Length: 132
Picture 1 (cartoon, rainbow, N blue to C red):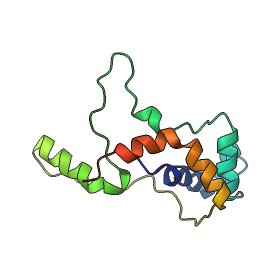
Picture 2: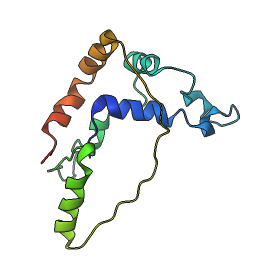
Picture 3: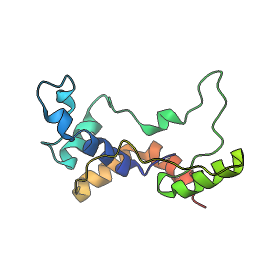
């Protein structure tokens, strides 16, 4: 599964805004994003050593491993389920887990342009992912 890159990053931002991380006694409190805008988070992401990494790291073949032959878009989860059902010969039910809190966000045109450029390697994979 591969998510639209800005949507993926916004999910990290939203996930890290959950109440559990807001507690200063939480050892991961330094990752809390409930007090920053998405634009601030995106700019910090582009300027940092990218501790969140890139989702592309999950789809690169590593030495000695089988290469990935299919990448499905996250917004077409139905196609993955269909593929899995055909592959294993029975129905597959996926549970929804690890859901990020709802938060609306916006980016300035300049920031969005810079972020799309920064995430170009991710967009190249996303654009080639299975959509039908």
